[in-house]
Image (cartoon, helix red, strand yellow):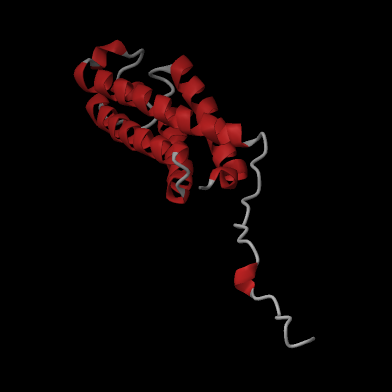
Length: 148
């Protein structure tokens, strides 16, 4: 090298930011899971309010339930699960890692609560359990693709 030529320095090269891997089409499942958590949380909260204020609405009495708690207790369980699910769904849509973990946990508890509540409200409980399973799958398998 001659004295007139200088070595290129790192500052002479243009800055290229690191690229994030492009999300696959499966990332839509995570959006689905976030929306489902919000929607199921809302329905769960409504179901809880019905159980708290109008317990004669359900098909069976307290003795016909899998766990013999009164409907007011079941109402509070559904209401709390529903409100947490709505907040978690918002977190999932924002790409928060904690929301994925909490979303899976809440979906499992929601499915178990609806399994125990199945004799009182069979069709709706079955639908919620199926949607909870889909949300668990989406969050567990494809949740990493929507991190921001």
